[in-house]
Image 1 (cartoon, one colour):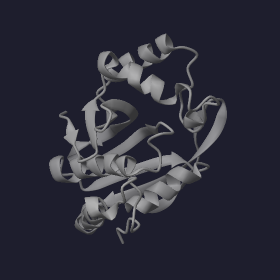
Image 2 (cartoon, one colour):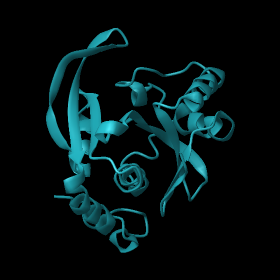
Image 3 (tube, one colour):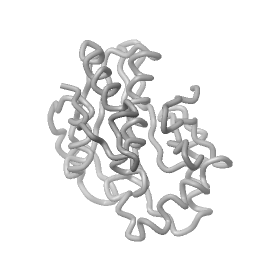
Image 4 (cartoon, helix red, strand yellow):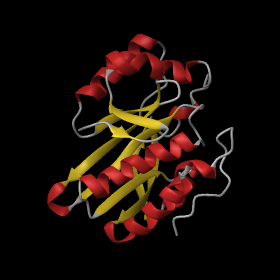
Length: 208
């Protein structure tokens, strides 16, 4: 898997050596209650050493294949995501394990990171169907999926046990026939002139 290049972010295959310290620092002080990890099956961590070991395990994984989200302005890794459940014969893949540090959340960089992942799936991998799944209680993730152009397909009840509790899973998908329209919406939104000097959007993302 190769790096994915954007205007404001760079996505690189995750590396404990290159990214673990930056990733840890991106949430260590800004998320003392560990809310970033509420709906994920891991975290928070008691020490950098534990987190670094976890990143090393993610580095070795090939499905899921993990990427670090790097802010080009600072050169720092500030979040992660993965390509997972690859089903090449049927042209299906999922993006998941997405987490963003508080400083990355709700920024143009965050949206561009997701756009780069989606674009890679359709334009480079040639998938027919791209999936997004999240805890049904995770309202921000469900809202993000809809904003990015994924269609809600339903709830899988009692799908998993995560951190000792039941997880119902909300399923979303995007199909190749919709990608041209969705891509055009992202590209309009990501134009530099759509942002003020502080990086705030002037017009909202519209992929419908």
